[in-house]
Length: 336
View 1: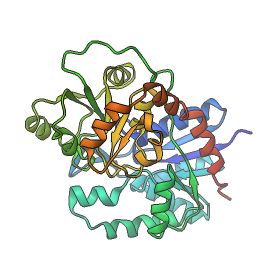
View 2 (view 1 turned 90 degrees about the vertical axis):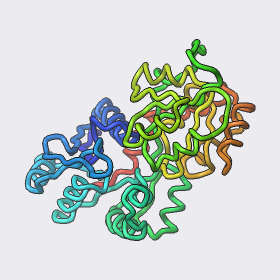
View 3 (view 1 turned 180 degrees about the vertical axis):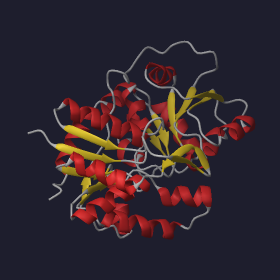
């Protein structure tokens, strides 16, 4: 049976991140299944750049416009994906109507705001608990994140919502020739302070470190590590080609809640080296898929020695957008 689903998000195109990719792929898959999807995003509203992260802009929504749009759509389900101005406006609308809604926890804002703007974590977590504890379902991607949020006092019913990969794009391919020494150690993601790139770029490993992505720390890191190759953003076939050209994927972040790039790397047959934190501990669960270690250099060395491309690809194939969207549908709550 076709459903009417409203998704509210402050993260949307042209931003390049895992939240946008997840919501865009989910909305497209839902529409392909015959459901009506309305995405309330910053599109159409005045926007301001985030002071310490100018490439990300937040909407300044007019509540009446948001309420009118949500009311006219008359959804069967409301899902609020982010805790910014759009998410807050739709949450207020639901509260005023007495509607139930679901939320999802995508981003470690407390850790990011501590790192980027020196905001105490306790302050941000208090706000996030208020925001999510009003939901009838809270979707999280991994068991370790669920355990952490419950320990912090999140009380909304927690439901699992994994992530997916375009397996037609991210797949094992022959290794091409590259214009720099191997092994090629690849990072894909935002180039910003909270991603731990210093930990990666300072490693005294042989070969070449390649960074795909952009962000506020790029100029500084590029100047500090002239031996690394910074390629900027890549998407589609261009991004898949970078995974195919690499020998190892290095994920130095300690603040992500999942890491779609991890499963893109695995689906491409690329082993992963990372810290043993939320995201990697839930995804890199087979020795052939890479290595996790509190010493990132040790993880790199072990993953290079033991990584099995076939095991990586098999692990990556478990993550499809169809399965991910099926979980999302099952987790939704009726508004009335």
